[in-house]
Length: 193
Image 1 (cartoon, rainbow, N blue to C red):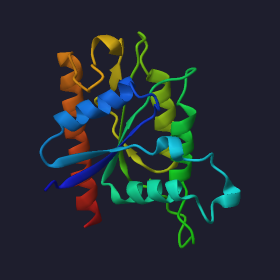
Image 2: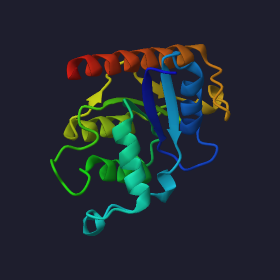
Image 3: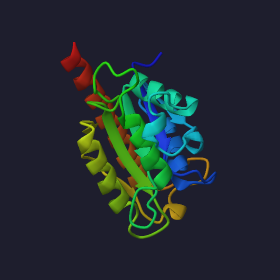
Image 4: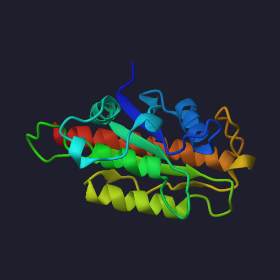
């Protein structure tokens, strides 16, 4: 049994996504004490609507429950038009809100350790999208890891669809990110005790 649970969200709905493959790689490379569960419900999350927030749709309830239950989040984002994909931003908007009935305005994302990574077939990778996510998580009071940064450029040369990372530098950075995430989870749990 693992000590820590991580909910991993790929910001891409594409079946052969490099970012979903990056999550598969993280699952393979995770330290023994870390369990990474891939969230697969992104496409079912409806557009954020405050009119239905008091009685959110079932996929939103499930997402919030899973975010709250996880010790940390691992986000793998593509970059669309210099930014975060709409489906990922929408899901995080839903997750950032408190559950109803509101007993406090604390978001399930508050103080949650978050690791961000991304892969793209371009030479720039996902630099801008990751920066936007860092800004979003600043507002939610999440604890975002600053290093190592995982910006996989020319992903088609480094990641196979099954999540096999063929590039040793990418593998080493991914292991480093997962080790840093494990340390951050441990620190958060000690602070809460």
